[in-house]
Image (cartoon, rainbow over all chains, first blue to last red; front, side, top):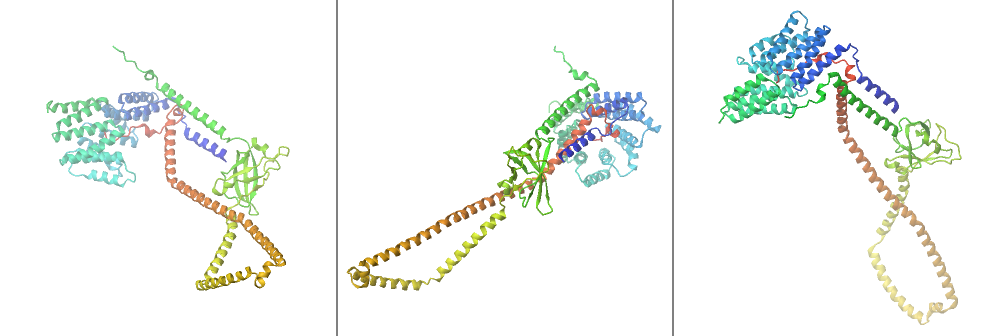
Length: 280
Length: 324
């Protein structure tokens, strides 16, 4: 009996390890591996390395005229470029993808990704009005994903012209309906609520919300989110006229942006630091 | 100025890195496999075994985990417990082939005394080497131990006798009237006074009794009566001595019963603790399964498996919101 169970378990393990063997030619396997390595580097915030891997993967796909593969590589390249504010590179990839979309080469799911990417492109440059216009096609097909609700709630909070909290309510309701708590999206909600608290000049509440999010992001080692929270906290400190704290927060954020090689945002922080007098 | 050296791994190609990592994984897997094989070897999982059977009236404490012991060595295990046609318990067990030579035609077994408290073990006596070996499938007689029911059945009549004895004694004591005792005492006092007067007369050799005491024939007759009385007393003493071991046994039996109850309580307590640990065990199992799943997923990303498993296409895209 034990022997039979052992043999059965060994077989299951073998099947699990070698499930769906990839019998494609090496070029596809290598290109996919490079995409995966690029995503791993992206997750570790090593953007130049990620770009290198995605470019190599694209070359492989181009060598066998795999259009789907090329589109995936371009989407990843654009996302990575946006992660460290290289808008020029991101724009090149987005333009190229738009051309492919016009030719009808993009599948529906990839078209949605492209729209989202364009929204991110405008969002990263604080062009919230354009971001809202770009994302509109995605709002025609309910039910909406949690990611889309979070994006809309955030754009709504940042858009100075918006007077209602329609998407914020939808986002909160969707989060409340979840059986398992989604802490990541809960922290996004914290940051959106912090925006509203600042608008209502309830700085203490905003700080509480942001510090909760900051602690979570620190545990996750999510550098960009940490820097973003620190920047928001620095702005609140400035509003409270606590300039020494503001400088401290800006400096912390600057170090992270420099580590990420995000020159655009680092420059923005330097400008903010210059506004704070040397002798407080 | 000190020149900065780049670690050699940075100059390796993707495939070479992948293979390097894969080599370490393969080495680890080989080591794990080696340990597994060693464990299998020491646990005698694949050793040849010989099966035997026995029939018992009461298989208290026996399970499929019960060990078979010969000459102090654990040589096998019970494999199945079934009910035979004659309602006896049919127990099948195996012993490793290397120990088969210990089992001869005159080998018998017994269930160890601790089977009552859960530590059952079938102890088989090694047979005479001159006799033939017991073949596969042979039946071995196993002596059954005293069960709790037997013990209780033995004690019950003794306790019942004691109960009736105490009841009789109580009746006798209740029947005694204190007033009557008082009157009797006063009568005895008067009687004693009369006896004293009487003895004075006897001492002086007056009356028939005085003569009896001083008459030789009368003396012999009294002596023989005393001898008979002595014999009777000896007989009574012997009977009393005979009851001593019975009382001792009753005492011993009650001590053993007390110990047994303590053991039984401990066993129930242990069982209760085991049941309490069940939810924690389930959680741990779930955690282990999750970890295994993670390990397998990780393994699939490493050469040589990474080159044979097709990754899901959708996973090759960065999927992130505006949460930076």
